[in-house]
Image 1 (spheres, helix red, strand yellow):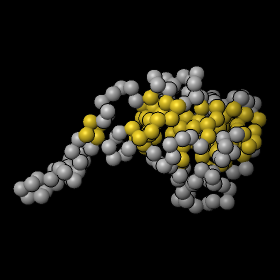
Image 2 (tube, rainbow, N blue to C red; image 1 turned 45 degrees about the horizontal axis):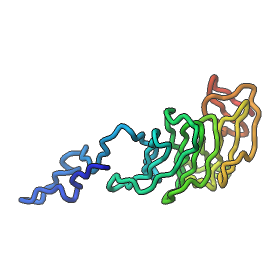
Image 3 (cartoon, rainbow, N blue to C red; image 1 turned 90 degrees about the vertical axis):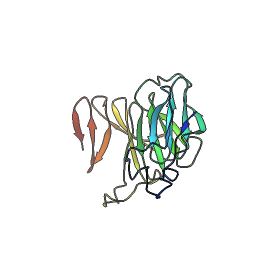
Image 4 (cartoon, rainbow, N blue to C red; image 1 turned 135 degrees about the vertical axis):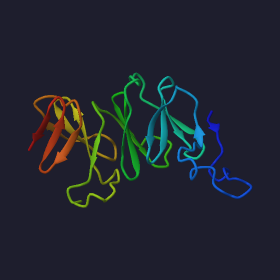
Amino acid sequence: MPQRLPTAAAARDESNGAAKGPAANPDFVTWDIPTAALIPATASNSVTALEPLAGRLAILNSRTGSTEHTIALQPGRDLAEPVSDTPTSDADLIWVGGTTYALRAGESTFAWHARTAGPPTVSPPDTVTDPNVSISLAGARLFVTGTRSAVRLDTTNGLPASRYPQPVTPTGRIYPLGDGLLASGPNISYYA
């Protein structure tokens, strides 16, 4: 259970109204969860934490730290692996235990999940040239590593939309670059 600490609004000196919170102390903590059983997973569209022993993801209230929902993760996965979050403007793509999960903002269930060898890479469609444009999940190009291939996933269901053969299985991420793909691990390789 989160420990509720004074909020910034309540942290005022009653004698003169001066701020005692964030203005006076930039490290002002508004809530804290005193447990080692949670691993932070996302802090962009949703605030979530992995509960590896329970095999689930907790969706936390960003104002209070309390658990609003929990979502079961795929059984039989090693949840001791690192957690990776790849956010879009309207969803978080969470990679843990060899599975990528799509969690849309404000939702309490996964939109889809897919078994993937590594964390996904999100990039804008070819038609977008402005680097400041935010990318929605539906409008993104989503790549993951596969066995001796780079895989582009369908953003609506997580199924493979296309595969691009590679001479070796990439161990890192796949990035679209021009008319080809940049694969990381064990070497950095460009395939046109």
